[in-house]
Image (cartoon, rainbow, N blue to C red):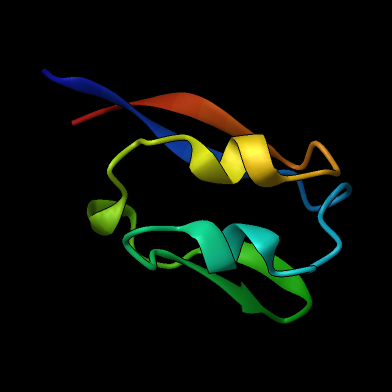
Length: 66
């Protein structure tokens, strides 16, 4: 079983600013219903750019097992 990391978004911290969406190289994040969401988990390349760009601490990369 392979391990990779995907972004987990904290609804309490997310302001739906869209910064994470703008920097995602695979366009797997989106703002929907006033929250950032991981729309296509399979497109995520685990780069962590979204976590680093979020100024609100709303995104944390967490392990996912495939």
